Length: 128
View 1 (cartoon, rainbow, N blue to C red):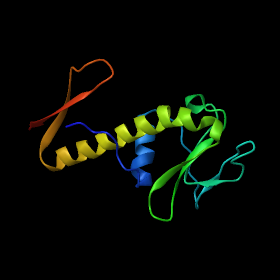
View 2 (view 1 turned 90 degrees about the vertical axis):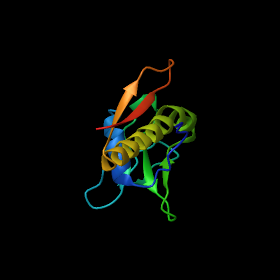
View 3 (view 1 turned 60 degrees about the vertical axis):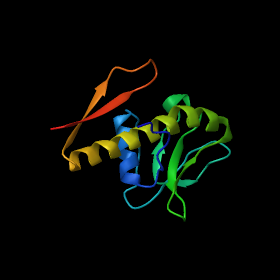
View 4 (view 1 turned 90 degrees about the horizontal axis):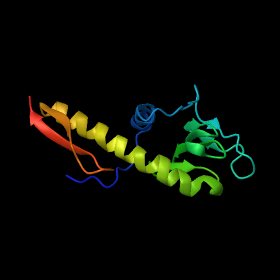
């Protein structure tokens, strides 16, 4: 199976994936937290906030739920391309892998990593 992208919709799942990636995340106790930003994003509310300097981003940035239930990246234009590559792609992969592990466990299967080409990962399912 080749996983291209995972739809990001569940904030708990995303927060867990960010932790798996070793990224510092801040959540508000009673709702969104505000971005510090500089010019573009000052005071923008986000559900999950990551500090400036994370993944070499110039400003702090975050993820917030849209009215249609999707989760969007909130960041300044200066960091957009960088975060698409260094945050969103690995985050989608981590979410997809977590979903795959949960589905495998529910089906009584084990997930193993096998040797693959450089820059790729191969996951195998085996019966327990």
